Length: 359
Image (tube, rainbow, N blue to C red):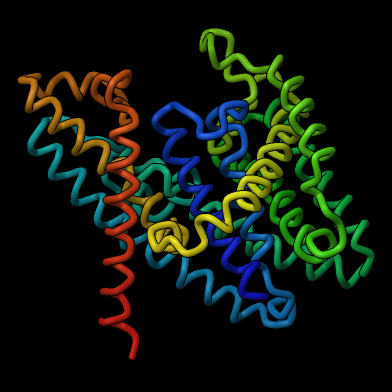
């Protein structure tokens, strides 16, 4: 992988985590793309871009590395947020999570990852682990059957498309949720792989004509958007963790594709201007820690605002974990402070890890 592409991927990861955090504050950095309309598909796409063919013949190494990079830090965070949640419950009287049990600590992370409210964005990590392991084994089988890239593309496209009707045909049990999420995400992982190996260096997808096509297509898709009136549903947005696509069938796939293209296009434009900014590099390198800690930072900021304005803590307990103080005036302050704090916490944790565990 050439250095420029690797750096572009890092900027793309930084953009992806910015989109996730802004989405949890209920605004979008790319206005025509509502929160939750493609951000997680983008992360799966990036994982596919970074997948290396050598692992097709070295399954053990791939699994070992994914366990070390995804699951080990996940359960350290799970322990940390269990302790934080207990502490907050002692101070405020509200336990932000499910009851403490062996199942909720070790099993629920793979079912939905919402055992502790403050760390619930990390549900994506365990899903990514399951998706990438499944992808490796399916890709090995497909390669044994046929080397034709279009056969592979058709197979993964069918998985992605049928994930949505599956959510309507079958009862959404915990296991069925895993199946649906995995089917949906596998398509975008392979799409990332396909983009790197067969499109990136062979076709220019970022011409004015492509821009016009995507802009018009997304404008048409906007007619399906209903975010401005929540009682009508979520429209272009979808909630992958609960397989909630409302009455849509193809719109979630299409808006994810246009959103991924828009993200790649944005990075192509911005890369010359941001490639040497250390904060952007750091952000892309610590997306895991930003994902893990941004709700905690927002929670602390809300507590500070409430204390300053003399609002009792019981008011915080009346809202969900995403509630922030006076969003009309404070949303962008939350966003900036959260990104700065979580990025440098991540940088600090990575340095600590190197000191403690690397020679």
